[in-house]
Amino acid sequence: EAGVTQSPTHLIKTRGQQATLRCSPISGHTSVYWYQQALGLGLQFLLWYDEGEERNRGNFPPRFSGRQFPNYSSELNVNALELEDSALYLCASSLLAGGDTQYFGPGTRLTVL
Amino acid sequence: AQSVAQPEDQVNVAEGNPLTVKCTYSVSGNPYLFWYVQYPNRGLQFLLKYITGDNLVKGSYGFEAEFNKSQTSFHLKKPSALVSDSALYFCAVRPPSGGYNKLIFGAGTRLAVHP
Image 1 (cartoon, helix red, strand yellow):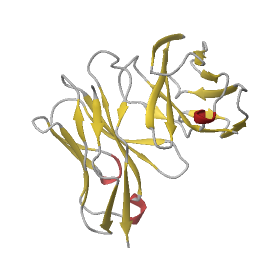
Image 2 (cartoon, rainbow over the protein chains, first blue to last red; image 1 turned 45 degrees about the vertical axis):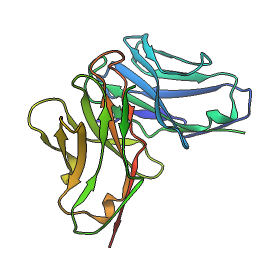
Image 3 (cartoon, each protein chain N blue to C red; image 1 turned 90 degrees about the vertical axis):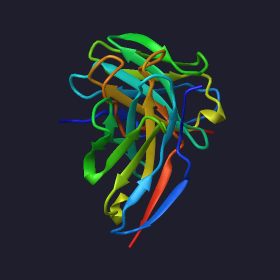
Image 4 (cartoon, each protein chain N blue to C red; image 1 turned 180 degrees about the vertical axis):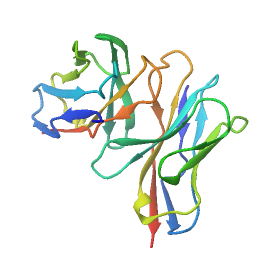
């Protein structure tokens, strides 16, 4: 069974640009979560999508947004990139909405120059 | 405030010796507790979880964790460490309510197993 997949593996952008990160959940999982792992800040919850709707978001500005598609894959968009947005962005999926174990993908390393 | 503490930045242990990675939490109610492991340049791999029942939970790769409600702890253990266990370990808690869906992570503990 395929795990959570994310693309691209690495992404390099300059300050002010927009970044788009993609995630495909484990087959059958309907919930998708996004986390940011920044150096010195640890793992922080960004967004939760379930059945195409945003269900909850962490303490991040509105320029962090996303969506979930009918096939349950998800996209994270980061607008007006800042240097401090450089981080590993991890996507996770779970079988049950808001519950059960979250399984993580390998992450997208975003570097903002 | 809800939080997870991993008091040790790094744990060093000799191969073959038992290992313990500590975790305490501050969450009201009865949270779900998790351990994940992260290898260099990789995502998080699920090791084990505690929801309810027996306080000793067994997980992947020979790891186990002991839930102690009175001490609000969920320490990760393994009877005999392997060099390949060297990685970054994260404890996480899912609060029982009010944003129950998200995981709150500790800062991580780097485990170094020496031959």
